[in-house]
Amino acid sequence: HPGASRFVFAYTNRDVDALNAELREVYRARGALTGTDVEFDTKHGKAAFAIGDRVQFTDTDKRRHIYNGNAGTITGLNGLTGEITARLDAAGGAGREVTWFAGDFEGFRHGYAGTIYKGQGKTLDRTYLYHTEHWRAAASYVALTRQRDSAQVFVARETARDANHLARQMARGELRAASVAWATPEEAAKERTVPQPDPATAERTAERTRPGEARDEDT
Image (tube, rainbow, N blue to C red):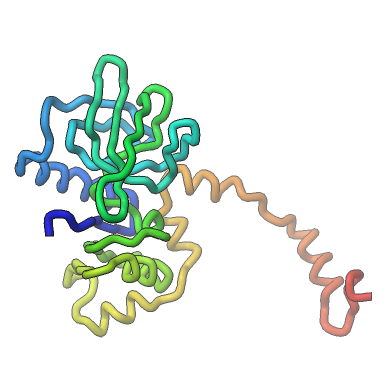
């Protein structure tokens, strides 16, 4: 249906970038993008945009009523000033327009595909899910509960040889090591800066809380 809301979900930002590039070319081939491309600096790197491009926001600017997770279609842009206007998606039709300057606000990227994490809280008519070996139970739940009408899962046989194998993969528990391995550079940096407990302190804490010994707060 032409008016149905659609979105592609993937697990990693690397996959999202690749899908956005491919899907943008499809839009270009169909004539959905007009005018020349204008390149802007975003928090995700340099990217070219044109009128008709899908855009999603990854930061919040309350002054402009832009919120992390909003998505829409670009309706105007000015390569000289960096001014961009987009019509946000809304249930039942087009939503309000927002305008920002790329030099002042860089929290945006192409909006054809996004991470499963960004899908939390969204409801769309149709979703397309790019499965990879990184999926776990929590991601599977979010990905498979975003649709009103249909959800299609795209799976490589090298990743899951059959439906039973796929089901087992998607039901796996979360692994902290896996989340760090596939984090973005920014997420990985934050992970590395989390203070680690001092071994001596941990040992003293363990001594105080051994079975049969009352803790201070228990007395």
